[in-house]
Amino acid sequence: MVSPRSSSGKSAGPTNIVGYTLSIPDNGRHMFMHKSERKRCSACSYPLKFLSYNPKFKSSSRIVDRHDGYITSKPDISSTYDLFYIASGRFRDFCLNEGYDGLIFDKFNDDPNYFNLRVRRRVKFDARRRRTTFDKYCRVCKNYESVVGATPSYLLRSSPLSDNFYRTDLIFGSEGRRSPLILVGPETKTKLQLAKLKGLTFQPAYGIE
Ligand SMILES: [Zn+2]
Image (cartoon, rainbow, N blue to C red; front, side, top):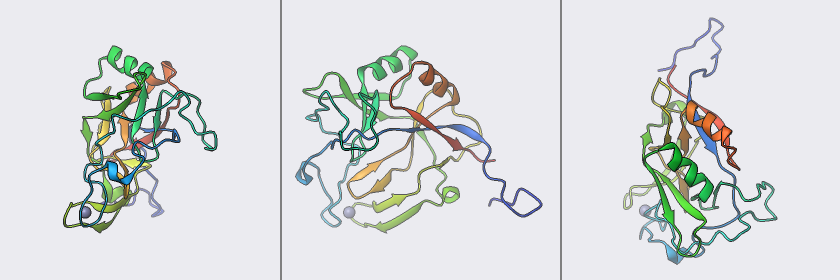
């Protein structure tokens, strides 16, 4: 599908940046501590609902493990080991003030300062171009044991994402650790950087050339 772009026969690499993938630091926590807390497939034993969160989760004041090499103290957005995104009240306020729709901030029973972040708006991921691999399909739950190859991201579109948050249609990861990527439009990236939200870095996402 992709033809060589230079006369030397060497691919020039992607140049069409249509948005940015959020790089989100680990917070050293698990959303679910025990296997029995999640509904699982009887055949492959992996969770059935990857995005169903745990309202009993507590971030505690220090949500970065001191043994973790990748430390961001009190980040405004972070990821659990099982790949749930945790947003601070500051992050939520920023999104509400900007009027971003399609974001869900699930509440925790005992932790009013943090939220489980989910994104509703979807973008199509270009798995063929990214060479994403899909391993061990389960006929019972219709999931793969692993979907690997998410970044740098390739999207099935050629125009830039408009000012908002998006999630990939694909859910990446393996076994009990799965998540879509979160992406933002170029304008959204600038606003997030100006707001100085802690913990966020950005990676370019490439569209169809
Ligand atoms: Zn299964």
